[in-house]
Image: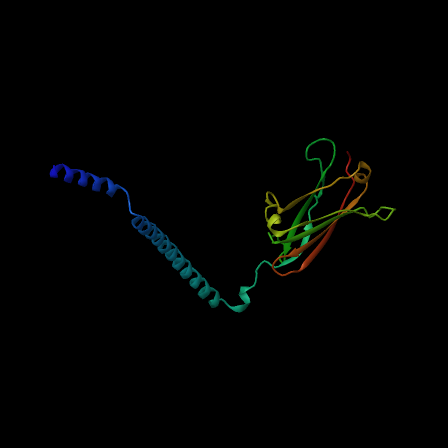
Length: 196
């Protein structure tokens, strides 16, 4: 009988050992958290070494060489700027502005900035010359860069113009605010009437 009771107690202890005590579970969770913190600390130490190397490299450069070598000096609207029928329904509902930032060497460069665009009918006899205006922020503009035969920003704007307006020369005025210097560059482009 004593032997049977000992067997039951031993079996019960075996079953109980399969379940973990809350303190053991907490200790395991703390061990995992400790390993995660150690991994993040190691990553931060690697990044710290990289940043220290970068600071040393920057400090070794002559002061005048730290400026942006691609100084923006002007902008240009490309000749393909105009109105387009995007969905081929016979209405030109898109104004596409092809904008090229130009550096001091005359090269087209990808410059960060904000674009303000306006569409004008400067021949309006009633004085209601402004037909539309838009603004494009740097994060959105960044996505509009194209590099094909010519690199440039291809900026689409929704327009709603009558055929009578499209039969007149319309003017696009663009202001580009350089994100690095705050300088504002202006350009205007006349869109000649296009046959329907």
